[in-house]
Length: 88
Image (cartoon, rainbow, N blue to C red; front, side, top):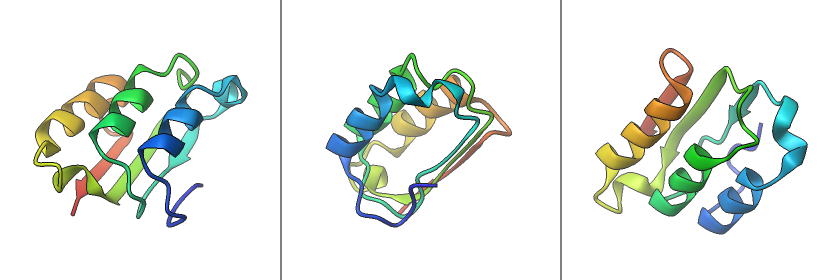
């Protein structure tokens, strides 16, 4: 759980590039500052293949005006019902 700790796009990109996450099955990133670039990095990560539960409530991608794109990227990658996503 990496929730409510001020993570932004840069931190999401570092997280997504970490091979340490290969065995991760749950990832909770709610209440951070992740925008579309961070969503893109997470969706493209080759290290998050085992994630079965992905939560990203209350991040800033809706402020970017691109909520639908972020939602679709993450939904396509992590699928439903693993995706709990809502911008603010």
